[in-house]
Length: 145
Image (cartoon, rainbow, N blue to C red; front, side, top):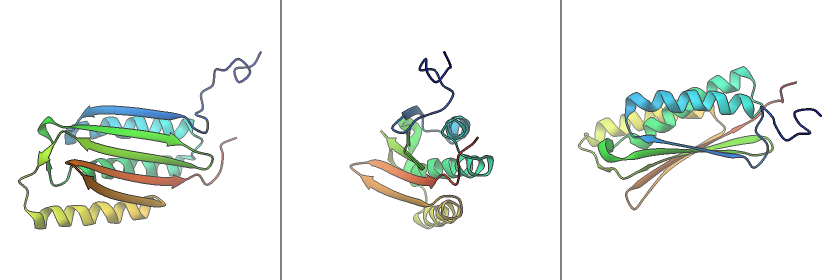
């Protein structure tokens, strides 16, 4: 019986969802990048797209953190695999408003958005009831053999 027939596999299938939650600290964003690399590879993305996603998720986390005091908050990443895309959502919860200058925050937001627009197909950011939600979507260019 093959691995696929027995239910085991090193790939993620359509509808699979993975969550990662960690303290909202800039030095821990590396965890998000590592997990993104593993998930992207298992979802069938080529090496170039995998690198794009790894960098984009770092920016996504920074975009969620900008303008907040995340000392007591958590970042929650949710990866959802679809037929030809991966959707990644980063939610910052439990953090208060930051003390950073609005001008500095705006410039940092703009830089993150420029990087995201170069790396992914779609992205966005919303803020509701004290929670910041940043998301991205990357389409798969081809399947691995």
